[in-house]
Each structure stands twice: as C-alpha cells, then as structure tokens.
Amino acid sequence: MNDPLYFSSDGHLTDVALQILSDPESNLDELKRLEIAEHLSFCDACLMRSIDILSSAAAPPLEESMSKQIMKHIRTKSRVNWINQYISVGVAACFALLLWITGVFSSPVEADRNLQDIAAEFTQGTNQVTDTLSGYIQQFFDHIENFYMKEDLNHEKK
Ligand SMILES: [Zn+2]
Image 1 (cartoon, helix red, strand yellow):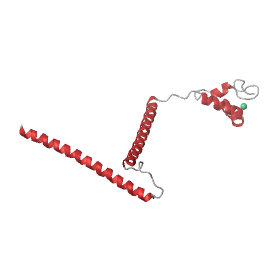
Image 2 (tube, protein in one colour):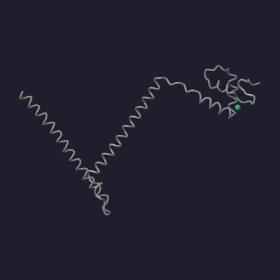
Image 3 (tube, helix red, strand yellow):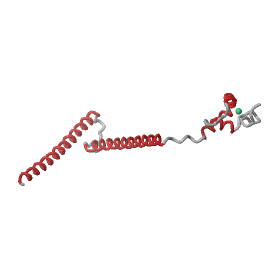
Image 4 (spheres, protein in one colour):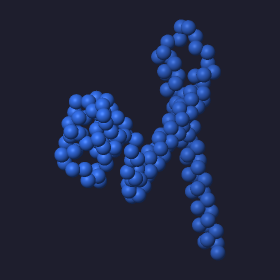
C-alpha cells in the first residue's frame, strides 16, 4: 500500500512527494525515494509536474564573487561592442569623407565611363589626400621644430 502522503487516491504523486524529491536536503528514506522515482519513470503527467516544481523553485543565490565576475564580463563585453561600433562608424565616415574629397560623389557617372576610370580617379584622389595630409604633417613638425629652436635661442640669450 502506497503512503497517502506521497501518493494520491488516483495513484499519482502528491505535490508533497514532488517537492520532497526536488529538495536535496530532505531526509526522505531511500525506499520512498525509489517508489517516487519509479512512478516518474513511467508517468509523464507526474514527470511534467515535477519539472514544473523544480523550475519554479528559487535558483540558489550566486556567490558574490561569481556574480561580480559575471557582471565584469558583461561590462567588458558591452564596452568592446560599443568601441567596435564606433570604430565601424568612424571608418565608414572616413571612407565617405575620402570619397567626397576625391569628388566621386560630385562627378556624375556617365554611362560610358567604365569602372577602371573611376578606380584610377579614386586612386589619384587618394594620392592627393595623402600628399595633402603629409604636407600638413610636415608643416606641423616644422612648427614644432621652429618652436623648440626659438625656445633654445631664448635660453641661450638669458
Ligand atoms: Zn503519476
């Protein structure tokens, strides 16, 4: 005869039985545990109920260090995503600017113009940009050099 605490009159497991089974700290005796487990092995209805009870049971609290680690990981991950996003936008913006400077956008593409011409023009434009940029960089360093030379002269005067 099955224990009425664990088995209802229709032969299925009671909620008490399922709850005790899902509780690792319950001191249910091995024979009862076996009886309940045996019923679960062939009764889908009780198996589904036991899964519901198990999944609704509160998840054990994470250890503080572990949750901190997880949060750190999430923060790092979202920061990397954020940076990647801005780098992509930056690269796209630079490329668009380059196209705009080289006049690809402004010159109407004629029907008979082939891709090679456009590519050649683009390369030419890119070279111009590079030349201009290196010119600016050269000027910048000249300025710095002049500045330090003046500083040196001032020091020598004193
Ligand atoms: Zn059952």
